[in-house]
Length: 289
Image 1 (cartoon, one colour):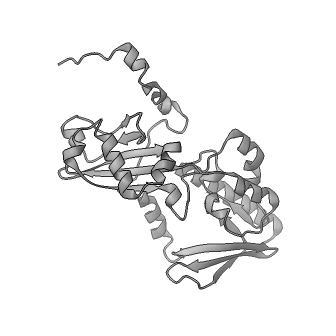
Image 2 (cartoon, helix red, strand yellow):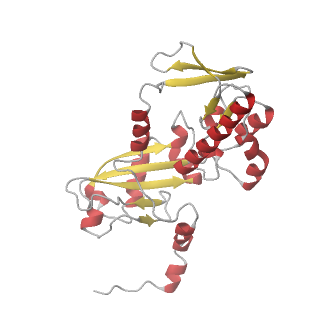
Image 3 (cartoon, helix red, strand yellow):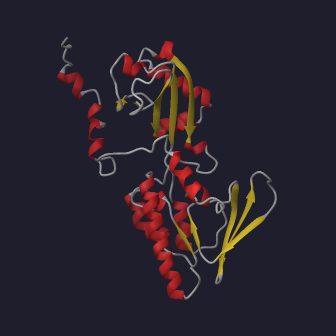
């Protein structure tokens, strides 16, 4: 049956127009793919190919370079207090700047200032599990996003496993900015409760179908302390080239050292660029590469 049209004034005043152009942004266009089983499958694949080369549970406490190489001091988090070291001819450092700014490292003043200058965006994600995939069964929603003017920001629906039996999971909130800092100050249980309370205004089924939830606040993660590097044009003009320069035997890589912050693509492109320039530096100095 035809529905009652929404009034023009209601449409114009809804704020929806602020979200519709997102698909036109250069980093949000085109076919966006996701690895089967979740984003961490990429890290698992790297771990499989590099088996035996990765030192896990290693917390870096200092990075020191001299004319012949780089020494990294670290400790095994499973046995804290024991000072360990690793040494190499060159170093590609991918530690987020929010953490690296707290690690002693003897680089030049331009790179040190760049590391200290970049703030990190605040963000919170909340996953909600329900007893059934009611959004498909009741409302015929298959993938996509519901934009809201509530603090939770958006509700995102899975684009796979349509009409699978049993429980289902939604991204119940993707929070940014000032609201993200407020959600960060909450306990995980409080964040889930807030997402359920706000989400039920869009999906009344929340009340009867909610099963459990989980949340991640990036500023609470001890190894990132933020979501991604929050560049501005002024910060880039002043610090970006210094951040990406090869300083002695050290070069930085990661989404923070790219023009695509927050994206894995930015991190990968940054790493390829960094190792290419470092290799050329090693060849020009006659040192090991």
